[in-house]
Length: 574
Image 1 (cartoon, rainbow, N blue to C red):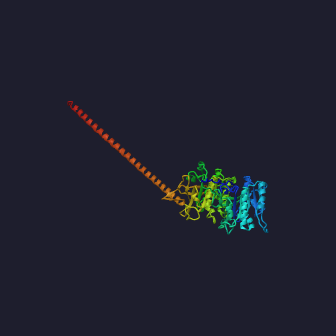
Image 2: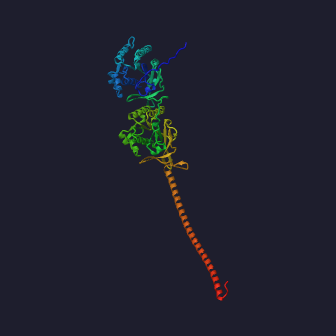
Image 3: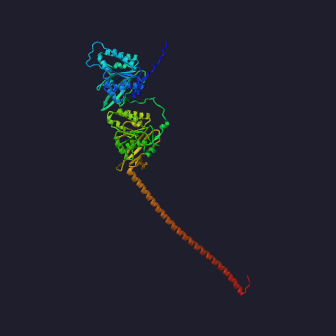
């Protein structure tokens, strides 16, 4: 007898509206099923659960119920007021808070179950046509039972009730603490992970003084999901989860748009790059302190604003006013664009938050400003204590998100030590950057000169020369490459070499003129001598001709005289 295998259909999903979470779960919560949300104190369980209810009620027209076992609804609403969810308005028709906090002085006598509470909730659910429900801090309820068997019985009762009414449910429970991370599990609640269809663990810890939050989807029946930990933060609008595109999640690229060029702000650098940076590319400028990384990023910002493109510049080194002042000294005028609203300058300190929180704040700022170009100066500031293990992941997701959003991203990265190789950067962002420009110092003749080279620029031909970067009151430019004896010369050495070449050329020119004059003089003398010889020759020829005539005349005269004499003597004619 053959058995025909029928593949189970994947569950439909219910969006939470939590940015990033719906991506890592490929749609949100399993619709009509139960999700367990575990985490330590302050990990964001209540916020996440309430945020999903608010989104469903506001945008998906799915009313919900929030059952609070620990905090009162008044306190929960007060704590959530800063997120701007307008809970009082939603409470009128689409959101119901049910307070069931136990009295601390309560003495339990006899058996205890959830039947009465579930009956009340069922009536209220019919009244508002609820489709979603949250049971917040169910561990408080389980503590009342004081019996593992009773805990299992009541939780299975709750689970079956949820399934029978096809609620999209979230159950939150506290697990772990400062000395016992949530990821270690909890013996009294471990059975719940097997019972539910989806389980998510939230973790909040401090690493070397830096607050780190992350979540992990432990299970999701009938659906694929991102299994690795995903960082998240609690921001102005609630919880935001950092997600990354997975293999297979690609979209068709607009090749014509991707081949579009944008100016670097330095004309001669545009020429070195074959026309400028590629739009939507990730650009990295590395160098030691003082090599003009911020100056090149400011030049790019000015060029973007001159094109009319909204630009966001985030500085981890200087205040906004200092950025404007410093760049004005090299004729990069940004104040006018700040006034027009094209350019938004944001100053921050990397130690204020974790790298993950900075990443999501940068994304939010870029969205709010509708930025076409984003500049982070320097991105290496995110590599602070406690972020060593997350900085590279942050850099990857930063570049990935900017490309997906169609934003041209320019980052600078600081190299602190001379021993650091040009081929590597502390955050390893150089491996994913499309264009990498490196700035360094060339020290000769007791002075420092800035050198610029293009290490790589994907998708475009580019110069392999090392050019001197020149800053002046008139602006930023690059000198032509100058080599002598196989060495690139810059600054004073170049000036001295060029001056020596010019002097030698002048001396050669003077010597040539002197030689020319000498030759002309000798030629003139020769011409005079030639004319004298020619004149002497003419005289000799004239004398020769005269002598010839005289001899001829004499012969004729002699012959004539003889004849005449003969006639005079009476001789006979010959």
